[in-house]
Image (cartoon, rainbow, N blue to C red; front, side, top):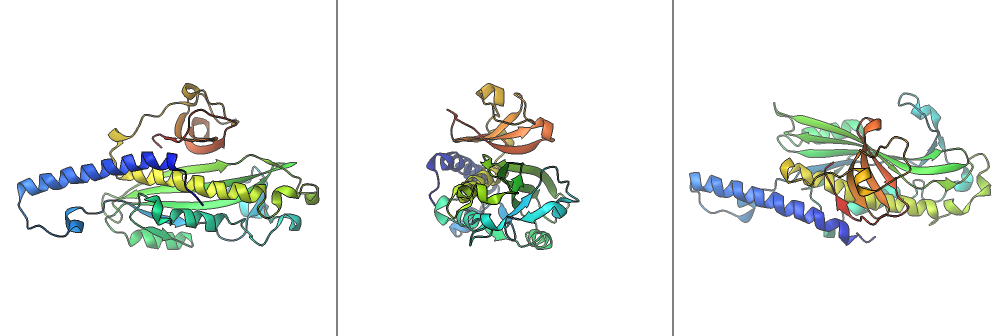
Length: 291
């Protein structure tokens, strides 16, 4: 899997700025009290956060829209046998882990911790005393829209600063990543088999989602070490002339991240959740804004 270079450049800018700030603080400290020169690691402490990832567990499942959190599990069902392949989750989890652990990507986190459950994630966070971290709990599903199905990823992001200290702070963001719906009827699954074949449209959407989500996570984590004053200003959907198919979006909603064929927007009608929506076409590509 190849990463798209146009997305990496803004992240490097943020990282360089974070490094510059760390350097200024070190020079100031040195002016107050001289200290013997030590290893480079002591002179430049790694201030980057840790990324704790809780990826999807188990196979991709079918869910009906409108399922509330308390009864969502009751509405989950296995994919029809005709839609299943040797990759129960369409390869999404493996693709996401490969993207996030890719050493050549120059990710903005100090380390990646993969968790298996909520209690495991809590335990991992507590082991990072006095540090900063971003916890990403990821779930993928296939939504039954009646004659169409839509692959989507739901991600709960929690930024934790000053872990296990008296000044610990947490910020939570709900993220929904939506793909183009595929023509298919779960009641008559053999009518449209092509999108669900191995390496077909559904597998391609899962692979693309893994790449897109890894880059979005990088923008979120990079900002943890950079002052808010250095974050770029958020334009609006209306200001960029973008009109995604979204009943919860307004022209005044702020754009978080813009990439080829997709916009990430903080939707006011969705209580500030970030929605990642497909676009038919866009002339604005690979731009990153404030989450």
